Amino acid sequence: MSEQQVISANFAALDSKRFPKEPSINVPADFNIGSVDAVLTLHQKTDGTVPQIHDDETPPPAPLSFFQGKFAGPGFNTIFRPSGPKNRENAAKNPALGSKFPIDINTEAIKKAGVLDDNILELNLTREAWSFSTPLGQVPNRGSEGQDDIVILGVPYTQSVRDVTNPDNGTGDASPGRPIHFEPGLFLHVPAVDKPQSGPTISRLASIPHGTTINAFGLAPNPDVETPGPPIFPEINIIPTISSSGDPISKFPNLSFKPSDTARLPQDLTPFGKTGAITEESFKNPNLVLKSFNAPLGNRIVSHYRFTVATSSATSAADVATVNGTVPAASTHIPGLANISFLDKPRTDTVTGPNADAIKVTATFWVSKVSYKIKVDPIKKGETREIVPLDALPGATGPKFKIVADRDISRGGTITVFARHIQYSQNVTLLFRKLDWPHVSLASLIPQDAVLVPAADLSKLL
Image (cartoon, rainbow, N blue to C red; front, top):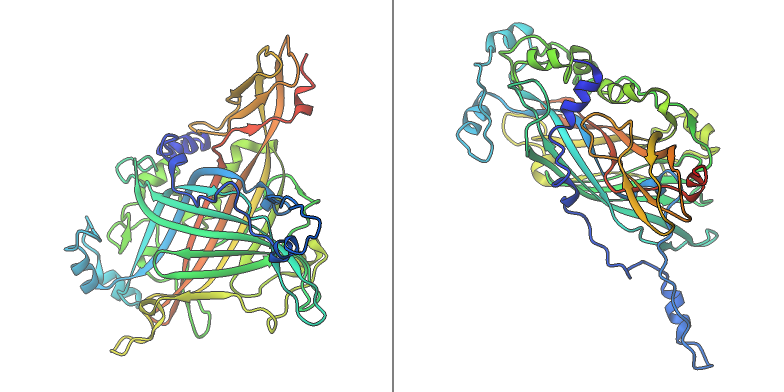
């Protein structure tokens, strides 16, 4: 299949009637977090007047300023989870787990490879929906002894992910799909500060249903400078490493694309290889799925922002140079994770280490400016119209563009307009059986709400 056919197939389960209804954090229209100082000042007025408190919905700087409304699109998820023969036998009997392998696992191949039969590799073609709520406004944080008070700007969000893997035809068109992830959280923009010294940063605070909360941060990009052209996605792999040394362990049979009798779901990847939904190359480097999504767009991706957040301070020199910032010192900021005891407590039986402890998260986001062409028919001043672009991706439910005519447009025509796409690649490191196991997830998201066309773009029409 061509890349456009693959994209169309992967959009197939993206039901536009369902995903916009995904639950979101509902912030009341008149709700915003502000300083108590302003309220106290009201009580000090002596002229009898009560000044109006302005409802502030100040958005954070770019690229977080583009995190508005609903986004949705296809993704790819890979995860190793602890599971030995006894676990699998019991899981197959549990309706809530439903873990049953259609092909018997070749345990002899596992022994021959010299590794333990202690894990399952699960691959999911996914559909994601992200919903961003109204910005929280200016949230005051208080400085102490030499550090001025600062204002943090935040955007609440929810993320929901469905597994839509269809092993029968090798695509991601299973509908409605199986919910596998739900995450409420906040993106925060923190300005540059002197004490502790740090350039502007972005933090992502999130809670995950398996029992993990994260506080990941990284330097914010310059809001006034975008990188020309499409994103360049770094290589990422899913090979486990020894916790104590970092040495890779690539001998697990389920890490080979071809065998179908391994501890992997789905076991047979042949149908996915034929359609291109999961190729041998993307199996080794999942970020190629993001690259494939962008391929049909070509030079329509005009520019992009990039930022990385992590639960350990791993900011590169290049990032610092880009924002002219200062890397927060490890001694002054400790981001991290917190897990329920089931995940992070050491075992007391013959198994050493925890069940599956999430020990590190790194996530990179790319926010791209993408051009579309729309045909605008004659329209009267004051009328509103929603238009589907002429060059939408095959099978996509968005974006649509909203026209609010500021004058009569008697002849109309075709104009170029722009929408923002959000892509991300995330790696959560899980610790069990003395190995660090990569849990890689990624998605390409396009707006589901109508994108308003600026009046300046309409001025090109007669």
